[in-house]
Image 1 (cartoon, rainbow, N blue to C red):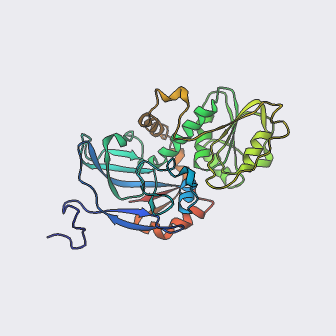
Image 2: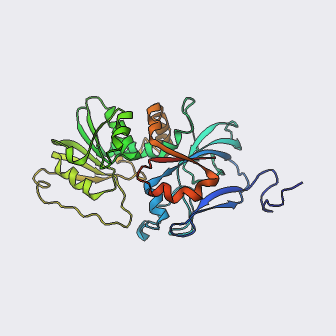
Image 3: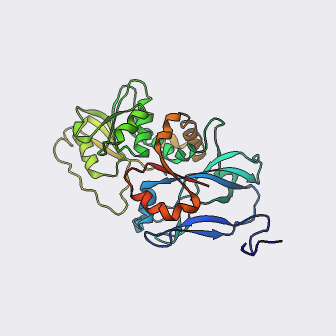
Length: 334
């Protein structure tokens, strides 16, 4: 006997998927949608967890994606069009149910929106290392971003490194930098509560006003232009400054007077969609994501999961999750 609530175009053996959609600015709901037939090389995945990337998703949710960036801001499997309605997200962890040559039950990461099951080409999936918990694997996209930031910053052994912004990306960037032999890495944030996070990750923490001396590499992952100005103030001769924040439609005012020219400083943008030319030939997306998953083996990184919500309850809590300054990576449980 068929389920009378099941859409007619969905096979009786395969239920409809449920996905989080943004129909208009500041609104979200769960929509039921049909899954396509499995094609050659396709895989059906059942979601275990997804992660809310607070900064980017808040920009999308609030309709602040600039028109000039509509194409570049598209996530690999988003649906709809900017500004609305859209289905958006890119931190999904699940297990293989059917299709392809992957074994049933294989746990995988995919750059997919918040949805309880989905079908994608096998090449879009990256298998989790056997010892990595799926709950922590939702950080993979953020870890890939942090890895790319370090490549752009060209952090070298012995460098003094300042990372502004103790959000998920900033904390992961500082975590990676601190593992380079001889580096002195400082994590800076205006929120004093982030000191506890830094301690759990084994990082040195300071509020902006306590920053002393000059640094070789300074990375702004705070989303605040004031932090970029502070980076300029604390950069040593020919210091390297990397802007890893994305401002959407917001304007950033910056003073390039003072010692900016005499110190021959440089400011470089970092965007995860493009890796440095020196890495492009050897580091396709699949390899970068696989390495990001490998780098998540440290249990201390669970400190970056600041909360968890069951998927059916997500529409009721999503705006609050984005607005809360305490939110790091909020995990969605399926």
